[in-house]
Length: 217
Image (tube, rainbow, N blue to C red):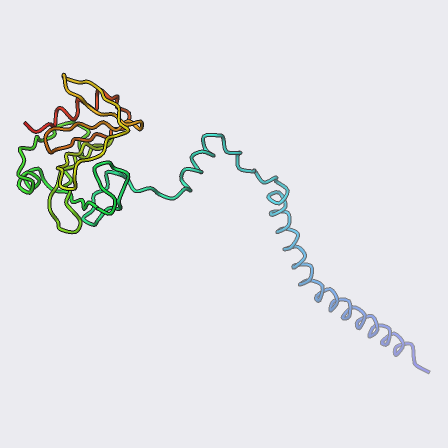
């Protein structure tokens, strides 16, 4: 039999072993507790933003819908864009089918020299450029286009033949006969030259005045 001292020693050893196992369990749980604490803190920080309702963009108004539809439609080349390349045949009564006109931005002196006409310089505030018109196949100068922010005024010779103004209506200005199309284009014939005005937002009288101010003397 064990003595009292030996039994006491065994009890103390068992107590010590129990304490060591308990400490090892506690130490093993510390990292797990730390991870759980980090997750809890992170969840508390993120939770308000997750619970907050997402604001929907305001519904577009009628004007915005129209603007979007216009911006998504294919771009249409501006009539005032200058180019040295040929233009496609158009419904212009001055341009016969199959013919095309080349356009080149020039100075007033270059236009005057190329055409040999007593051209009138334009000093209007909305004037943009002088554009020389030439036959695309031969390069022969046949006219000049005055480019404005609101449209154009062209002076063309009869190099391609006389234009057809069959569907135009007559309009009297300064005792002269002008011609007006259903679309608002105003034309004036003098000798072998044809003046044509396409000006957005202008009345027939204002278009006639613009042509008259650029009329070759």
